[in-house]
Image (cartoon, rainbow, N blue to C red; front, side, top):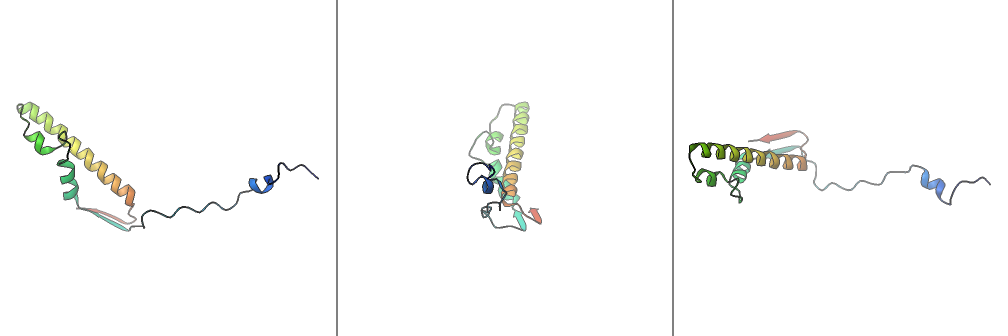
Length: 101
């Protein structure tokens, strides 16, 4: 008898069928409609006063400070919108249409 290794080695080293993939958590979606009004409102009127557009508008401090603050708030809002939309789209993964209105 030739040495083949430990018992079961022969069958364990052969590729077999791959394990079944787990079922998806979400069913497949063809189309995704995003209401950007709701997303923009949520991202610009957050619970965090550092990104709340209304709080920044009422903070005072002169025209230059207000312009710099507005630019920072606007950039933060846009970052939040991009993050939120990216999370939704990467979770849902629409196959045909992404409609943002």
